[in-house]
Length: 144
Length: 113
Image (cartoon, rainbow over all chains, first blue to last red; front, side, top):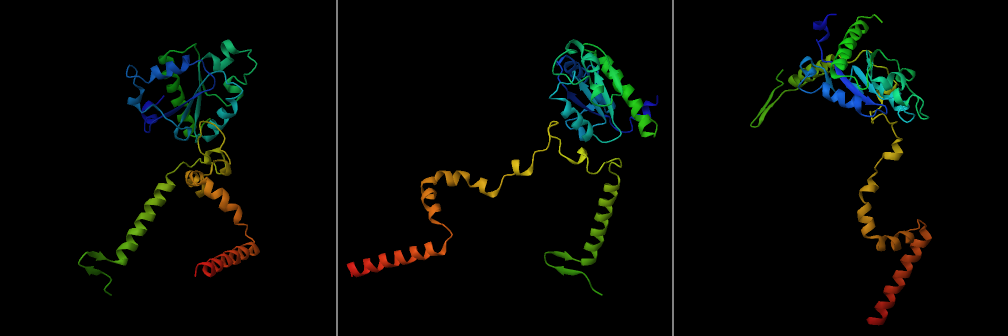
């Protein structure tokens, strides 16, 4: 992994809650606090998917949120990486047999990085972002 | 050829303006060329981000000039509710009003002269 070349530009991250209980969202907020301070590497949350390189998705994807998740994904510029944060996004978690789920996330949009946990620790989320960086580097280099 | 005009307030030269325009156009082109090359025309990337919601029809969200006068017409509702129906758009009605008022004024003149 060549971190130096990946940080030639800032990695902008957009967070999308697809029906999460907010546990993962709180851990994402914890990951951007001064204790971990990923912003020193240019990794920061942005308010629009149009500005983002990485899409962080939390939650098992409810019926109402599925079309919105698709639309937000389509609005992101290429190359882009999708990160699934938490167990719910991977399998539905404790909501797996709920009547109003259309997820998990990879049933709706392609997922590149999975960060398991209920909820995952900030260190795990940051590790996932670093993994996403390496994937982005490969995408930008023309590899898939 | 003398192209520069000196006045007490400043200088005007069309050649300088033309050069400045060309430089600005060049900068704009360079900025445009440095944009996202993977941009897909006609896709969702062209539509606004509204928290993931679909973009509503323009008619559903458009605020016309008439909307700005809502408070005005609402405040003078008593006036407009009587006056607007009278404006039928039929010339015969307007001529009838014209002759009616004319007859009324003539009657007043004859009575109070």
